[in-house]
Image: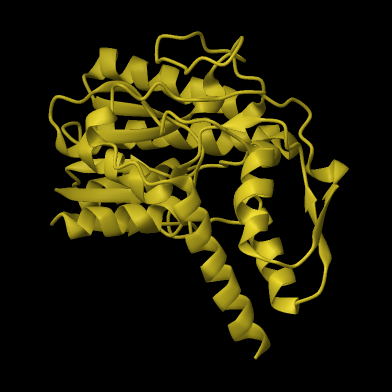
Length: 301
C-alpha cells in the first residue's frame, strides 16, 4: 500500500512509518508546516497528488493537559483538521482506507475497575476527549453518507523512546536519569499519582495500526491497549525509582495536576488481541531510561 501519514515526524508517526516500511508498504510522510490540516486547500492538494491507498491521521493536540490550556485550538486541530482530511479523501481518494486515532479519554468515567469495552458509554471529561468523540461522530457520518472506509481507534496510553516529557512517564524517567547521572540525591516533580492507566509500548500500538490497515475486513471502532492497568504511583516507585540507587524525593507540582482526573482506565482489548505483541511496560521504561541516561551523558561529557 501507499500510505499517507499525517503527523509523520511526531512520536507515534516515526514508529508507524518504520512499521509500515518494514512490512513493504511505501509511505508519504506529511507534517506541519508543509501541510496545515486547518487549510482545506493544502489538504486537498496533498491527497489529490499522493493518490494514497490508505491515510493515517496522527496530527493532533494529543495531551489532555494541553487541551485544558487551549480548548479552542484542540477543536480546531482535532476536529476541523480531520474534517478537512475526510473531505479531501471523499473528493480525491474515496477508495482509500482511513485510520483515525481516538482515545480512551472518550469514555465516561468508569465505576469500579472493569476494562472498558467499545460498547461502553462515551462522556469525555476533558477537551481532548470531547474532540475525539466529535472526530468519531464525523467518521461515522462519512462512512454512512459516502461509504468511506474508516477505522477509528480508541487508543489507551502508550509510551516509548522519543515521547515528549509533557507526558508523565517520560517526564519521570528523564528526571530520574538526570539525578542518577549527577550521583547526588535529588527530587522529581510529579502530578497526580493515584490514577490507574493502561500503558503500552508504542511499538505494540503501531503494529496494531498496521494490522487494522492491512486487513480488509477491519472497520468500525477498536480499543488499542494492553488490557493491564497500573497505578502511576506504583510504576514510579516500584519500577522507575528502582533504576537508580540514588536517593530521590517525590514532590507534587500543582501545575502538573489536571482539573479533572479519570481514576481508572483499562482497555478490553479483545477485538485486537490477535494482533497484540504484549511488551511488558517495565521493559519499555528501562529502554527509555537507558536512552535518557545515554543522552544526558552525551550532552555533559
